[in-house]
Length: 320
Ligand code: MTE
Image: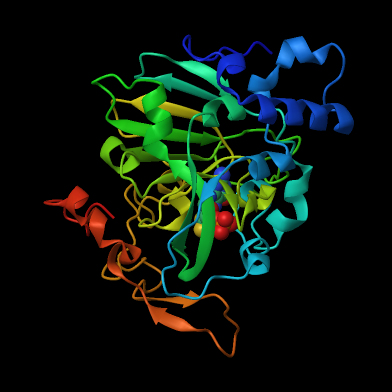
């Protein structure tokens, strides 16, 4: 595969040498780097080896005064329909996905479209921990320490044109490794697609995550790179992204296409607008059991009031 990074980004210039060398050593030792593959694939198309994060400085997150969800709950109770519809399916089957090499294509309304490997994409970007509430539209919630960086930082590298009004994100489509995509019971038109308005994507709270709990993302949580938009229902936080497209028109998003009356494009957490089949006024906060559901009140924008100005004048009962 020919990988074409934006014209001004030369991997050899921007990957710190220590990281570059340690990753080559890792690849050689793990057998990823076959003799002839080096020139074809090169560092720009690779995923992130386990040691990569240890070589990076990560700014610690601000505690939010709420109990953090255990790592084992956050990595074993998941929604990732590409691996099945049961909450335990992603943890069971997501190891079947190969995340190295990994390339993200950035297209549409940008001055510098291109395909870029993860290390090149992340070079020069400061990683930070963000401890965020995650509120699923199904009325359960968690508090997760993500490791990532603002969406805006990546998008700006590709120079959006003045016509860019929305950002569309696509998950990998690889039925050979994603059993949910080859299931005859699936009614999803793969790949999973999500979208944000440009000003939402540019909001400092919207991040791309590459890690959680101090480690690289596990596959079931969307390795190697996913979106996290904490004031919206969890389905907006699309996993395992391979394509980012800047558009003039509002993108279609998977759940809205499937059930338009139940799931909107905006999907802002809103206790005042119920899902047609259940109330959104409260949520089960992990740790939760049948006998101790740990039910708490749901907050507008999931408690992130600083985004309210993005929706001034918008009727949130109509634009749910
Ligand atoms: N992304 C893809 N590609 N496929 C999915 O099925 N599920 C979404 C979102 N991102 C999903 C996805 C839903 S419904 C939720 S609640 C969150 O991922 C769950 O993220 P988590 O499993 O890391 O908690």
